[in-house]
Amino acid sequence: MTEHRVQPKLIIHGGAGSSLKGGISAVRKSLYAVIEEVYAMLLAGVTARDAVVRGCQRLEDDPCFNAGTGSVLQSDGQIRMSASLMDGTTQRFSGVINVSRVRHPIELALTLQSCNDRVLSDYGSAELVRELQLPIYDPLTEIRLQEWMLERAGNFTKDMAGVVAERELVEDRAGRGTIGVVALDGEGRIAVGTSTGGKGFERIGRVSDSAMPAGNYAMSQAAVSCTGIGEDIIDECLAPRIVIRVADGLPLQAAFERSFEEAYKNGRDLGAIGLDRTGAIAWGKTSEVLLAAYHTGEKVGDTLEWQGQHRVAGVSS
Ligand code: GLY
Image 1: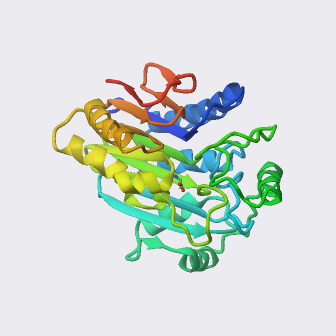
Image 2: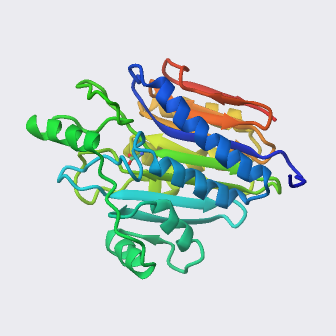
């Protein structure tokens, strides 16, 4: 085991939205498997950035979540994914918007970290996939196709798809899935990654907050990944709002509380996870549930049964 200057910390999410209607144990199992693997990497000395990328890849591979495999379909029946990565040490953001036919959109964001042009839209992202010679990959799952077919049969009355792919399609569920990972490594470096299939049933060309700093932001002091309705997250500019408050001296949980108080007053529907360089971890939501899990070095916990609207909580180091 590597000697650490600081105790590594990790928090991940698999979206926010309305009640899971019984899917809690499956989601917990998925999140904990990722927490265990990625926390072990941090203990072994992997950088926060590489740990975040691995965590995002694992969540993108899980058909339960709305990112990578299991992404929702847009109004025209196509899947277009967005992902971004921000390294707090270099304060460098990179991402792809509305990319198709790739297994791990976060991998493209990682490649772009060292490029001059660091955010690519659909056409540029497709070119990058070709340049990297990544295999063509279809992230479509049967349950997401059925969800779209059901909505198409009703001529698209919903404005978004379900937060997680549940075995049974439930007519009245509403969700805002996305995945995110925030890590503090043993050298005190912070990174954050966020990846999504979008809202589901959206207009072609709609741009998600997940590939903008509004939904995914890091400085050397703190980092935050958001989930929920992208437009609400953009209007609050939520991730930088929280991170900059920490950089200006507010404790992490106080920064979450102030920012979520404002988001709640503004009628937003969203959630966020974050950590700071002191090792504090925090999360918040205005939605009914937030699907998050964390590792403090001493304990593993989650927010799956943390119900009721407008709440902020956390664990300090
Ligand atoms: N937060 C994900 C989206 O709205 O696209």
